[in-house]
Amino acid sequence: MNKDFFSDRFPKGWFGVLFSSELAIGEIKSLKYFNRDFVAFRGENGEVAILDAHCPHLGAHLGGGTCVGNTIRCPFHGWQFDQAGKCTAIPYSERIPHKAKKGALKQHHVRELNQMIHLWFDPEGGEPAWEVPLSAEMSGEDGWTRWYFKRWRIKTQGKEIIENLVDTPHFAIVHHAPVDKITVEFDQHVARQIALIGAHPTLGDQLETVATYYGPGVMHVEMHGTHESRQVNFHTPVDNESLDLCYGLKLHRDPALEDTDAIAEEYAGFAHKSFYEDVEIWENKVYRETPLLCPEDGQLFELRKWYRQFFVDAPPQINIA
Image (cartoon, rainbow, N blue to C red; front, side, top):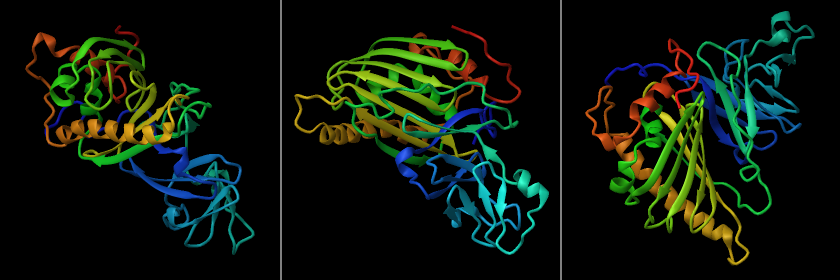
């Protein structure tokens, strides 16, 4: 793999790791992102915690443990840790070591909103610098279907996916849906594309879309066309060569339609197919740090400058709109 500024490092920001429906009360999920192991669990209080995965006692992976109340119980020796990573019980000892009581397991910042679970990652361990906004439509407001989503683990890096925001020509070539009008704006951690897209062979008549990145890994989309939809695209690095890409969609319920859910499921299938047309290209391309461009190729270097701010050794971006 060719090396460039973004290679072998991870950006800081909020990253989607699960949809809320994927983690029930009392359930544990093992996660592997940023070359690290995590465990996510939902306590009986309904809250989600994400901790480092390996027990500080003798290193067992807590993903094989059990959820007890609002704690996770190690499968090896039964040590229990609360949602803040503090040891609360050792079944064969009345005395809990002081370091274990203070918090022997690292607790990671979590936000559950829009029916999704987000993890904050910063390679330097910093606190969250911004928030993903709450959307009523995405959060289960009446009049909207549930999320229909699909996840892929693919061999690429976020630097490739992010460039779709400004890559106007590929819409016509890859997706057979030419862009009639597009505006891209950058402001601190936010990058927004406002577009008018010509009729798509599966997604319907002319589409009006507003696609907004909140940091380097979470994009919300408002789409107006044959059906009004809300969409989410989050990509989360697994290691230096691969990531998890998740694309979800929900539709506004139309009283004139007999079964909006059936239409939403079919519509999501079309959207996933369209999205996978990009996946096949990302997995087989190389990254050009100094690409040969023509005037119609858009704001590629502005986008790369915006994206660069999320990496260590890059200055913070104030406003390059």
